[in-house]
Image 1 (cartoon, one colour):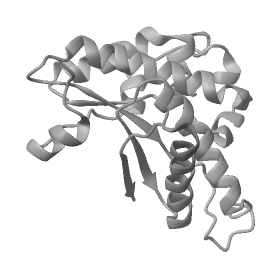
Image 2 (cartoon, rainbow, N blue to C red):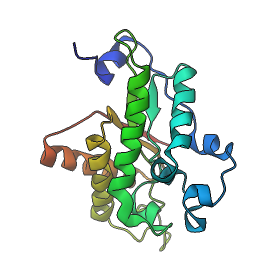
Image 3 (tube, rainbow, N blue to C red):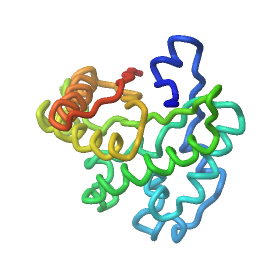
Image 4 (cartoon, helix red, strand yellow):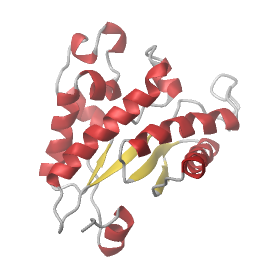
Length: 199
């Protein structure tokens, strides 16, 4: 018997999401080596690849606390954000690895009466396309749409139940993220719900 989908469960009750990944990682006081080297220090998302035990323990702690939904360690895993650490080419590997890691933990805590879910986290790129600032707005809508389409693919292929586009500060970037994901859905024939929120 297949488990209820995220939307089916959401229609029946409140679903509780996990807590902040970044502050949870900080509690570990990791060394540069534990991040994969000095150039990757502070790249919390990439721990899903180079030090997955840390992310797995954090996911499990939220499951133990009663969360229904785990967010993947991919908040900063768009190409522009990963480029800041020189690993932009790792977009697929990073997002897919993080999705599979969260999926394994969620599944290990799931039961027929209490399914657990995984939300593919998609955060802001750092650009503000609607802004007047010449640096922050130096990106086109189509470029942003491609960035989010690129991130959506490995998250869905990695097994997430939904995409959460979160902490968006620019409504045009949010629109690009949604439409990038939808374009991937159309081309692949696969889709998951999108949960979008602004700050």
